Length: 357
Image (tube, rainbow, N blue to C red; front, top):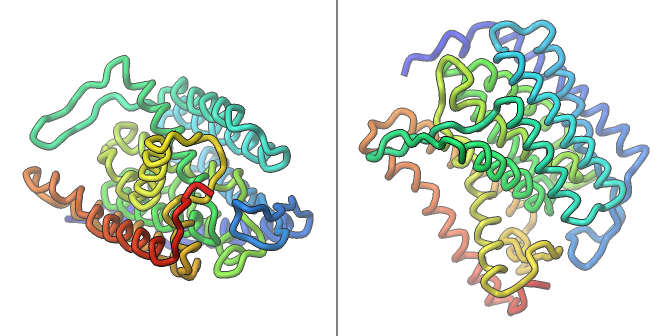
């Protein structure tokens, strides 16, 4: 694979931007620690003492600052203006509502309505899936189902990242690995907007993560987790057909394979058990592992590893000939199923029979 010139063109300038945004994010996070939006312990949470939340404000602020600079001065990294402004409008909307949720703890139905509204804003600006390429089958035109499927994808990933943000560093570290891989893949293929936007989000996450892992001085809050999930979902759509070199839609699902596997398994298990899926709980795989005695720092690092595996699988998927692609995309299932077995065994040994508590 011959790297696109963007893979090395202006790299020092982009690294300087990454460092500057990380520093800016860190400053905002430090301010948020001082002013504090307290997150009090309760039986469904992992922490035992009151800790500030909404540290994700630093991630959002750094990303939006970079986006404004990109809009004002970027040329090679810009997609068509309606799409660009649609991303900004949707990002601001989800960030504002998620921050208000941190302050006032909205009911789930209110959160869902806000997420649907933000997703509709992005789709209304034209950011929607139009076709899906399946090996051995070909390209399927989604037609009028495209907008609805796009909104469903965005809302699911937004909530998946929110659900997974229950352990120090897990969501932020996973999102950071995903952003770095997505940026690298986009750079190799000349997807300029996705390359730059992924770097901007990575910069915000780099500034936040030292305050959250291995010990948490502050939590992401919904403003951070929902924003990261929302933007990664949007970038997955943008990468498919809004630039000169479209990327596969499967890249972002592969990068978030650990998150999506955990959330999908947990939702399915709870539905089959007749549980209320909107009710707070502590039965995600990562939570069960910690309750069964596994070091939370190790659990978080394992989910970073799943994102790493997803990134390497993405590179292999892109480089592989078409007949091999269907086999490659399922490669991450091997470590994920092994993880499921490990959690089940540890839960049984720890006598955790009531997962819903």
